[in-house]
Image 1: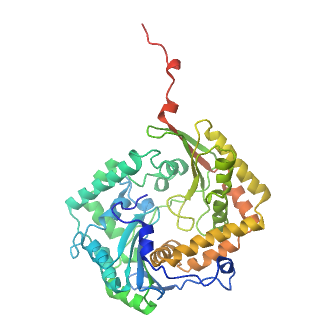
Image 2 (image 1 turned 135 degrees about the vertical axis):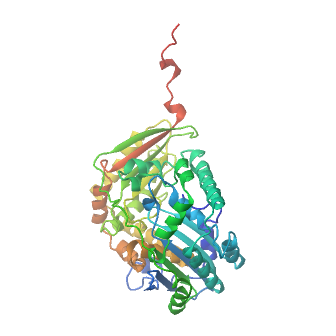
Image 3 (image 1 turned 120 degrees about the vertical axis):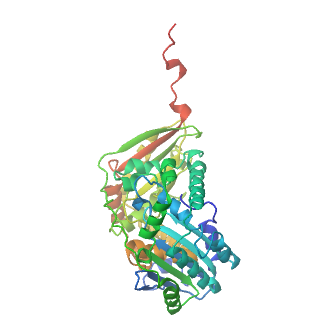
Length: 472
């Protein structure tokens, strides 16, 4: 969600990053502190408040860059739903010094690629290219941090682009993103967490140039951003270039965020929805997560892998293969990941299911699997496999310079410490069976659960025989 459809995917970007980097230890060895891969992390804050993270690695003559702004859907103005996403698009529409098209042309002509995305707690802009293009990329990022080309034509064009995204990805798609849009509206109480981050057409159309200028002024200053560079650059070079291109941008006051904290829910929430495009029913079941930095976060990462981490997971084996109730099953953490949120978020299980069964049957089967974990825990062998899978995903992403830069920027922005990148494997490795039992019993309760049963419209239609007879 909320990625510019005109840009390449993150996967394609990652393929252009350093592919030559390899772990010097096996994942089993990496699980021990003595052999664990330590990502080099160097951090400096400039006088204007910009935090700079550099992770040097000379194994490939390429670099990845990420600029993360600490603003996302939670901080967008009321009556301007979708504005954070709209603004992400506007950041690619040019500046007085680099008109529309220059940003893409400069980066792609040097063999690079770029992208951007909007999430509840941040908006990120990423590039990867040969290291010879590093200065050009930094100049471009600093230029659009300074100002944009604010004009009516560009605003109208991008309003239409976002509206078309909504049509393509939500309105004209079976299930329409109900597992991440509608489920949030059901599970959360506060507007900041519950509203539609894609935005209503009315709100998008009502956004004006004054809104755009104010949003850039308030949230796109250097003191509200993190610049991360990973790859073929030394810390001294990275800091010097950051100072050269960003150091003269003045810090700007940032609005104080509202209190969007929420506790766990105390009563199950249920909703049934019709879907005119769906062929089979679907269910989304979501539970509120532990807070970022909680002692329960790492155990929940292991629990999420156990329940929904692929075809070997408990829920897939139990509901799809075993009981044959569901046609497929997937799980995810809201719009981000288990380590990349800074406010209330959800663990969501999504499944298409057979018309011959019911949502209640699926929920009962999920509850059985959860209850078994609470009662029996996890064997040492299974726990080791779960940790290995999580560590493999973590390290595989960090091999790619683009993803490494982006992860470090997000960790610095959300946690205030990019060195969390080296702590996550330690936290995962320390999780015990008792920890998994505790978080399952605490968070995966029916009281903390929100459920949407999305049915084909025909299944909810009143049968003709039950309709009242027409009056003579």
